[in-house]
Length: 106
Image (cartoon, rainbow, N blue to C red):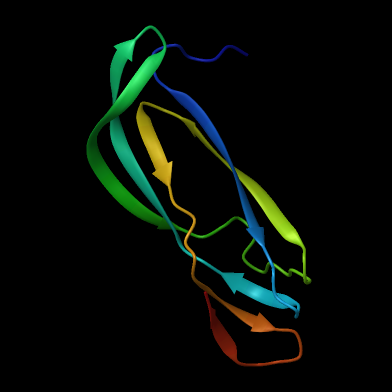
């Protein structure tokens, strides 16, 4: 397999960690994904152009269970004619083991 040389290729490792004292069930976060035009600057170098779109995306594991001090890692890859920018939010919703209520996380 060969990588295309006419647009940027980028990957980002993301980690969601439970730094609390209870097991978290059904973690739900929405990640904003912004798409930008890729402006060719130099051989293999690109910069952000005009923003084209923003989509909200949920992590690939929607029934995530994290015990205290556990983490879940996933990767976001961009292989296309746009630059893709993500921001992991500092807030979300989850349920504690043994509870029915959904809590806001900060």
